[in-house]
Length: 447
Image 1 (cartoon, rainbow, N blue to C red):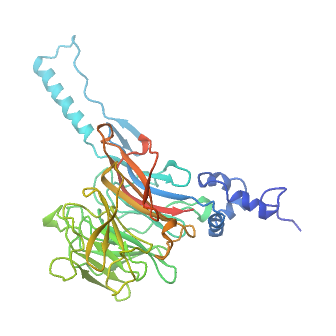
Image 2: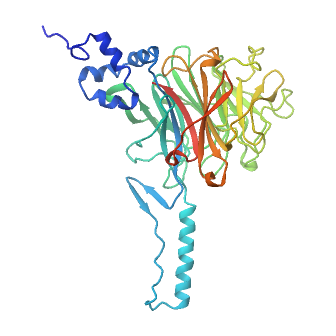
């Protein structure tokens, strides 16, 4: 009979396990290559639960981030620099008119270079040790879609979907799933595409009572910039999309939220095709039990204005709280929205929607250096990779935000902060210039 080797030769398995759970996540790919037993161990959710219980789990934030705004444009697998046409030398026979034409062409090319669409990548910020990394893009095209949505899925998955093809700038229905646990360290796989190509849409993740994971999407716009009413839901484990009834209104650049108590999918604000950039007051929610949409807020509803900021998008600047708040007592009616915070750069404040009074109230300050384009996501204590219940203690809750900073030398730089919800204090993050681009979407996992 062959005896199974210890996890680490010469050490009891409990001690060996204590050693392995302390290895930082960025080295796990190397652990998997050591031996089959280590590979199998790191493919079990139990391993990550042990990391969490031992206090060695790490909070990872995933950011869809602009990686360049320079003259360098990235194509599949290569980087090329757009060169302006050469200036005629003094010995050339070019006439003044030819030189003028070439000079004008050079200026046009330079302008095109400066205003070419940024290339987007997937940045990983480790909020536990403060390190920044970049993830390799998924095959077969090896690029990240421009303006795609990024959401985390329990227990340890990441999904990217929608956005634009970076070559054609057309909306796409593509779905990419990354599993950090399964198989040989996970990796990218193609998911079933959405039934409709869309960008700038609302999305949110819901975990059902049976622990099924669903991703809701709604609104956005199509290739002709027509705002959409359509919605659908993705069953992650079955890899299937199911159409939902359409919303009551077109909603482009809307924001999606899940009410953890009821499982309802809320879609906040947005605008119709004929009012681009004018963000509406209303919201609506989809009840999976009833299978229908209901409206909330807006002019004439009697519930007050759900969104009071017509010139500001709620996308990425709002977050559904998973902790109790002084303005968020237990729901008095089932049709109330979840408790929501909004990072209001224009008003220089952190606001919360008062569900009882139907209006927004200031609950705190925002960092002095945060001036524009905030993108935030939620971190909290609890089991690794699991979405948490709203009644978690505030002292263990943090919110990450990255946005445009002030100062002439930092106009193109974005800086990051972490908010401790319990103390209300913001802590600045060290962000190098390589990771200081605009962030479109963000999500977090504990691994």
